Image (cartoon, rainbow, N blue to C red; front, side, top):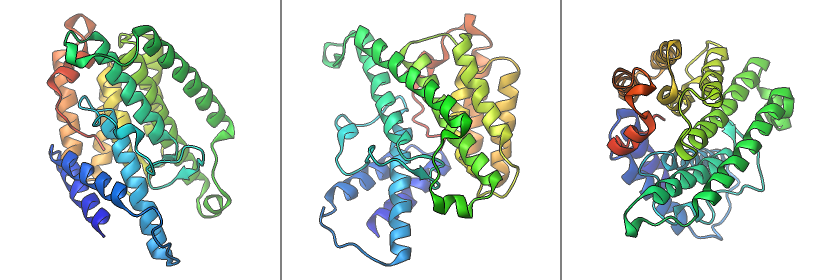
Amino acid sequence: MALATARTLCQVQILRGEKTWRTHLDGARAIIQSAHPQEKATTEKMQIYEKSFLSSWYNNAEALAALTPSGLLRGQLEADGVTNPSMSYFDVFGGVASDIPSLLREIGALVEERRRSKSKRRSYESLLSERDIIKEAEALMVQIYHRLEEDATGGLFFDSHLLSVLSPDDIQDYSMSNASFLHTALLYLQCGVLRLPSSDPGVQGSVYGIITCAESMTPSLGSSPRVLLGTPLFTAGLCATGPARERIRSAFEDIGKWLRTPHVSKAIRILEDLWSRFIDESKGDVWSYIEKTNPDFLAY
């Protein structure tokens, strides 16, 4: 019950576009960590369902928080009992494979290490050398590209139960959702770690990859995983140029038809402000600007 309450409060603040969402997310984490490891298992289907839903929400929300300029508290990435990367499955609540949140947290930590390596403050020293940071980023990119290729040829795993209840369109939509988050991971590695310019072919490849995923989803009810694409679209918007910007705006507006919440319109406002400031790369680096201004906004 306490975790459900923390989730509700956090979700309300995220959807309102308020900064206090982080307080409730930290509270949810404290609840998870304080839970007794030998807690009696329940056989009630509804309780099992709710536990899966809340765990999924927390894992995905914390992963997205790791990608923000403020990142996570130090040590948060190594919390026990939050994720189990060795047992991957497709998480329909989050719209991604269950190991994607761990990947995003790892990338968020790597982006933070990159900032530390460039900082002139002695109290802000990096734990890794610049060479190690670049090497790890490039290795992760190779893995993600390989995964995108595998998933595109039917490599994305859905268990027998999901295959029995999901339509072919549903499976296609969830596959697109998963791919959009993998492209998001690539953009953070390319721009947040390697500091590649927006014009880089690989960067634009992921921008258009996310746009294609959003536009390829079946226009359907608000329960579609399409409504989960806030972070991928926002990330693509940071790197978008030319006509890609209008397509991202349209995708957000489409989500807004189902989620009539302030955070969708706020995402559009932030991007439009950035686009007006950075008409092209000659005006500066969007990623450096967003890290400096740090709106602490979660495009959930």
